[in-house]
Image: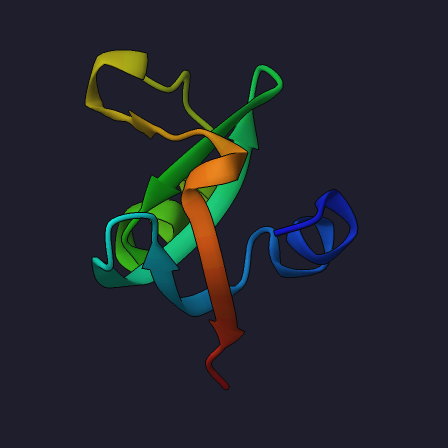
Length: 73
């Protein structure tokens, strides 16, 4: 998936298909220039609390592992 499409879906609740065929619902966002995947609820909590994020609890992924992203309204 290209960077331009990823930039359009960052911070939005989506259905994702990852390399290897796994599918998941959640949000992709950036933390310190790294791509993070989390549930919508976790993302909302991080955004609303505006606290320092514990990076040990984040799932960092490679952009190349995202095969498909579909925004959920």
